[in-house]
Image 1 (cartoon, helix red, strand yellow):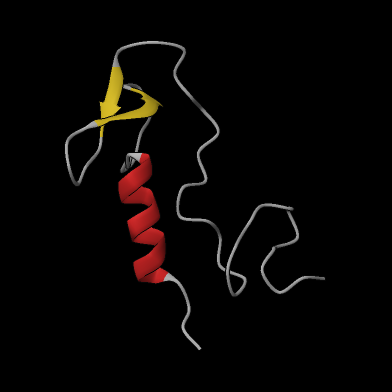
Image 2 (cartoon, rainbow, N blue to C red; image 1 turned 180 degrees about the vertical axis):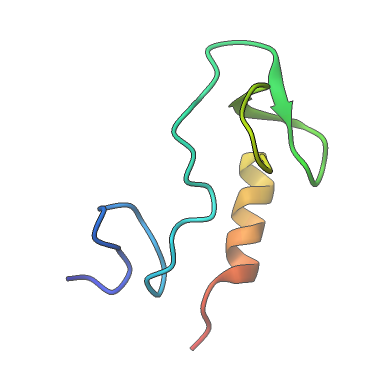
Length: 68
């Protein structure tokens, strides 16, 4: 098993679940706002939890990635 994937087949690093493990995507507006930069995300407004735009999601993943 590759150390960068978990058993569900989703990408992960060091066995941690991915930061943006959302399954819903919006077909059209209204889109949820990113909780960090307030730009529209790819998720519908009805999604619960902290939604991040792709840029902020990537930056958050970089901050929380394992080092070493």
